[in-house]
Image 1 (spheres, rainbow, N blue to C red):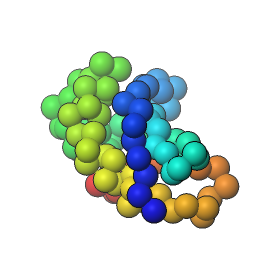
Image 2 (image 1 turned 30 degrees about the vertical axis):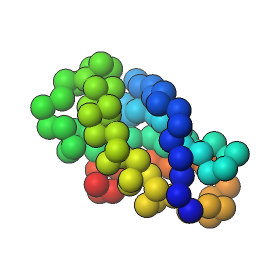
Image 3 (image 1 turned 90 degrees about the horizontal axis):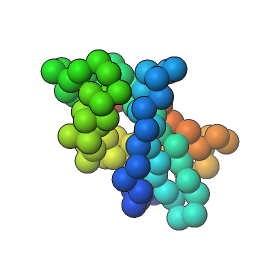
Image 4 (image 1 turned 60 degrees about the vertical axis):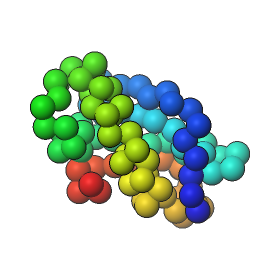
Length: 89
């Protein structure tokens, strides 16, 4: 199943040091979290602050969406939340 990403919103979760974004499988909203280590792997020169994480996310958004589509499996989890780690990239 291919997800859609019509909502460009993303937010930085300082407590867990990751960026959250959302995909949609028809009417089902699916939460994704990209860990800081994954963003650092994709953008090694990024700054270690909220603005740096969000800028890094924006610069590789399409790649992140492709990985989100690859790891998502409809109905395989009860929570509809996925964490994308450095190993996923």
